[in-house]
Image (cartoon, rainbow, N blue to C red; front, side):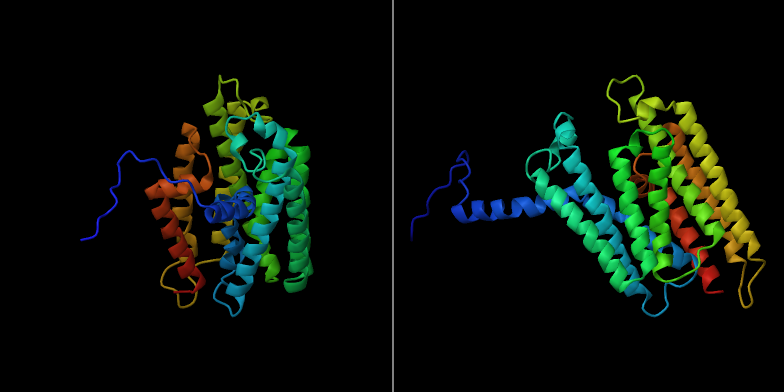
Length: 318
């Protein structure tokens, strides 16, 4: 029998080999750039399917491939803005207890590299949209990048305008799928999507204001808003979004030819329930990131699935 080398429980871990250390060093910059691009935020860009879904065009030939491209383009545009923003705020982030861990602030990604990568990514995104989509898609992406950069530089310090800019970013996500596919955008779609986005944005700001009330640490401009004002904004936005959706659903008439039930009109029920359910979290001051609210609340997720099912039945006239 060959003797085995005993392994001591208290033995310290072996130092990494030169090859392992070299691999980690080589991956340090790419992984830092990916982290700076905020992968967790990419889920928001699923909104690019909103306009084609509202028009009942999701199953049309070639739509899936085009929407996948638009999703990638919008993700790249948003990532470009994050890179430039973190490069610009590197010094301030180093003094922040949480933001100091961001790759640029922590020194994992040099500031010039973040700037250069962000600018190149933004330019390539717009150029790709111009070549493979259409002029309007490229123009919308260019407007998004310009607006978000202006927000990072100065607009985030302007009362009310900061809410409008963030809301418009969500609205652009909802619009761009229809723009890329040359689908006319209904006024009711724009009203519902726009005020629905304002509802979530202002509910998030309200929650932040409630959590930070009485605290010395506040985000830029948040202390200038009162919780009462932000409550008024999200309540107003929720009411307009519900009204816009109901007017759109009722405008389409009664039961379609061959349809079993008036699914479009019935879809108002889960839509209103979803708004009311989300408002519970907004009222408590716990409506943080919208994706987190939806994922952690099972009832809200079920209501959302019911609404999608009813809307799908309306589109296929079942």
